[in-house]
Image (spheres, helix red, strand yellow):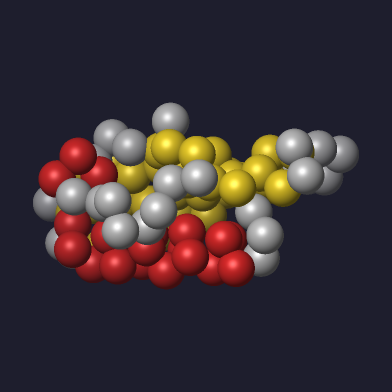
Amino acid sequence: MQPAAQLGNETIGSSWRVSRDGNDIALVEVRHDGGGVVVSAELGGEGSAKRTCTLRFLTLRAAEVFIADLIASFSYLGCEIARN
């Protein structure tokens, strides 16, 4: 499990795999795009349709705050989060 507090300059290019009961349910990735930062999440567990959500942030800090909240939310729901 990857604590949300371990974000930092190495966040760009990072990804996290979210699973529950051994099944992958999301893959969250962070990358630079133009002058901002993009957080994308591929959602969908085994046997369900895959869906991709993409959010743009003007700063790395704003993206990190979002990711920290997202990871905490998955943790509260009993998911395991592993940094890739």
